[in-house]
Length: 473
Ligand code: NAD
Image (cartoon, rainbow, N blue to C red; front, side, top):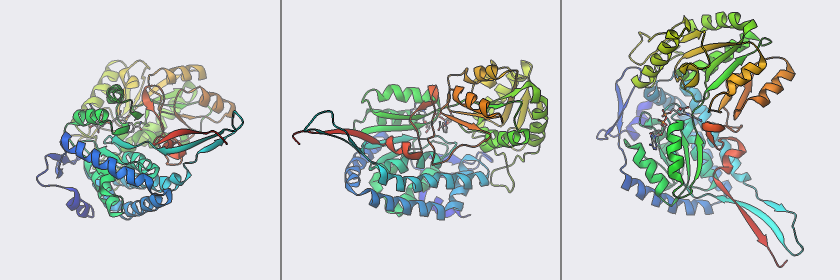
């Protein structure tokens, strides 16, 4: 296996953190963990390295980032195998995530050169008004297991491009992709102290440390809303800047005038990618009465044909859930929905493929108040709610504390504008089921978070805007 070469560099036979394959439960590797006092030392070193890095030109930083991008793409297959081994997603999706994650490095290698300030027409004679953008300072990041590589490059690439140092705590289940990225970054010429990955078994202690160390000027977190709230409260101590990419409850609305085949394609892509374990995946299907039965028939037929298998197996489309707790949650939500009157059109139970597998499922008769429509399912389950009018769909879609991604299918151009504007979400995809790209701002509103990743806006998250008044001109 190609990944063995990387594993030999990042594994530590004596390490205390065990990484297991969610498909088989087998040990993939052990890695070393970092105690809080070691992390404090690395923050101090990062702070020093960051000051030197900030003095280099943006072009110079971009050249080194580009070398990192090239190494990641050279190692795409090995990184994909490593990702599938630690988080279970089908190998084709892991390859896609490596390319997607690498694209942020390529993007920000260029974007760092465009951190422009402004010259503002003055308010008084003899004075000049300008702005400039400067690196925010030493950064910290905490990332989840469901995108073990891309969630790191989305933070590290803009931080480094802006002239900052960064220390990353990856998820306990998936430290391998993060450590492999770190090794390749150092191979590419990124100074070792500038970017460090610190696996731990005590995330709360490291989160607390990131928030209490005054050298950390910015914390970027991707994960659950519950942990995001803890970090937001803790970050108040030093008034550190925060980016929070949190949970979602994405509606996927199919109107009477939709192209149903396209809507089914979009539904499969949005819902079943990573076995439904993505923050932007469709969590509630809202289908208008006139097309409800036709849409459900088509969707159930496609879902029943999805291949459930370990991610490393050829043709796998739906892999395991990350762990038994993830599967228990899906079982509980589906069980409650069925007990309250929902009907399983396909699936509806655990899969015999292995301990963490769940059958791809379509449920009809779901009501907006059921837990399965209120909580993040994080599993391969599509619950369908029937609605009558456009107003009703918008009301149901917005009736949630979350506001990350929303999807809808329609052809009437007036409806497309009305609904797009009315949806209270940071991202809306119309007639498409996948919206993540490095060129567009990714992020949520309401309890789905603060800030944006990707695009030119993603760089601003790591820059301070300084106002410079020059008098006596
Ligand atoms: P999680 O919040 O449990 O864990 C995320 C990270 O936070 C992990 O690294 C974990 O170790 C760490 N953590 C846990 N407790 C902590 C604490 N007290 N202090 C500091 N750090 C702590 O989330 P998860 O289950 O790993 O990931 C799934 C969640 O992430 C879902 O809610 C999903 O929607 C969200 N997510 C959001 C986005 C986005 O861009 N909005 C992307 C991917 C995932």
